[in-house]
Amino acid sequence: MSLSLKILRSLANAVAGFAEKIRPEKYQLSYLRQLAARHGQSIVPAGNYDSVPKDEYVYGPKNRFLLVPKNRYRAVLLPDQKKSTDLGVGWITEDNSPEGYDQLWGDSANLNVYTTEGGHARERLKKEIADYAASLLPASAHIADIGCGVGDLLGELSARKPGVRVSGLDFSAKAVEAARHTFPAGEFLHHVIDRTLPYPDQSFDAVFCTDVLEHLEHPRLVAAELVRICKKGGHVIIVVPDGDVDQFFGHYWFWDKERLTTLLSPWNAKVSRLPDTREFIAHISV
Image (tube, rainbow, N blue to C red):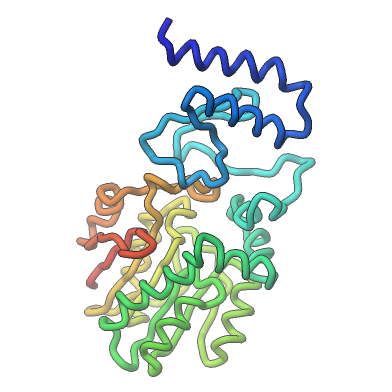
C-alpha cells in the first residue's frame, strides 16, 4: 500500500471516529484541517475555492463532499432549504433564477458585498472592459449590454464616451428597475435570455455581454444573436471567467482560452485575457 493511500485511510478513519463527537460542523472541519496539516496536506473548503491551484489534489470526507465534473450538475434547493448569504452573497444566485438575482440587485446590502468582495474585483472588471472598448466606440454610438444588471458597465462606458446611447436587458426585474433609474433616457427590457434576443437585426454599434454566457444553456445560439443585433462594422464584446479556476455552482460552462475560441470560431473572435481580473475577453468585429 502506498504512503499516500495510507495517509488518506488514516484521515478517513480519524474523521469517522470523531464526526459524531465534535459539534458543530465548523469544529469538525477545524479538526480535519489540523489533521491534514500534520501530513503536509490541504482540505477543501479552505475559505476560497478559487484559491486552490487547478493542478492540486484535494479531498474531504465522502459524507460531506461529492466530486463531479464541471458542467455536469445543476444547483437546486432542497425542500427545507432557503436562500441565504451566510456563506457568501453568491449563494443566493447560484440557482440562476430571476428571484435569486432580484435578491442581489434589489438589496443594497447584498449589492455592496457583491461589488466590493474579492478586492473590488467586479468594479475593477467593468473598468478594464471599458478601457478596452472605449476606443472602439463612435462618439454617438448606440450600445447594448445583454445581461446588464443595474447598468454598471454602461455607466463606465458612458463616462468615457458621454455621447453614447445606452440600452440593455436583464432577467431580473429589480436590475432593470435600477438601470432605468440610473439612465432615464436609456432603453431597458425585462427579458429572460434563452435562445433569442428581442431586437431587430443590426440595432447597435456595439454589443456587450459580460459574465453571462457561462450561465446559459445555449451559449452558441446567444452568441449568434449578439452578432445578429450588431451593425456591420460594429463590435461584439464577450467576457467570461477563466474556467480553469472558476468553480461557481451557478455556472454551466467553464471555458479556457482554447475552448472559448472554438465556441466563437464561426465569427472569428479574438480571445485574450484581461490584465487585472484575468477574465477572458472575446472581440468579434462584425
